[in-house]
Length: 210
Image (cartoon, rainbow, N blue to C red; front, side, top):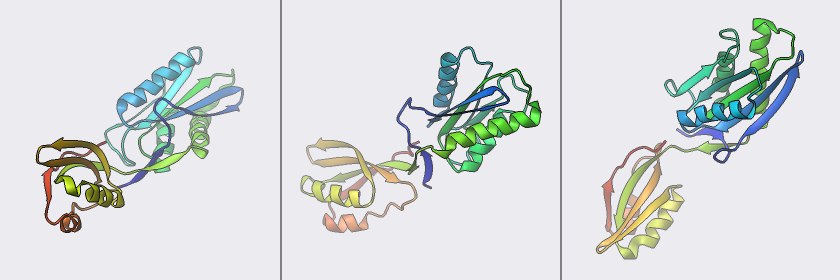
């Protein structure tokens, strides 16, 4: 099933900032296709703002509703006042493959547990307001074998199906196209087979891509 993700290049950040009761909250949001990317974001925030008191985080390194590749941290704030509220905002956004770090500079005035939870939630909401997104389509890698004469027609037909060709291998007896096929579409190549007059072979079903 297709779902929205941050439309950000690798290592790029979307940043937001606000202040409450003299405490400064800086929000970093990034694309996180896996857990390592989420942990990397936290490490970058700690390095960039090494003098900050807290670097709280939350991430969903998978589709919306993901149950395993998720996480959150209060990083020294009272339990349940930072990481979980941040995660709840991410979870409610409908976005996947997303990581967030909120850096806090303490301003000398305590916010209380309720105030902290509201502040960290607001920090994430502000970060999401102008976040560019793009639709992610989960795909499965499949391999199709066609003859040389049919390659052009095969490429044209696959493009019309919103399938992308990841690799092409030319052999003595034909061409093998490695195709990233949308997982929410059935593997129905009957139309293409007719167009190629039967010169089509499904070589390997491959495996789902992240």
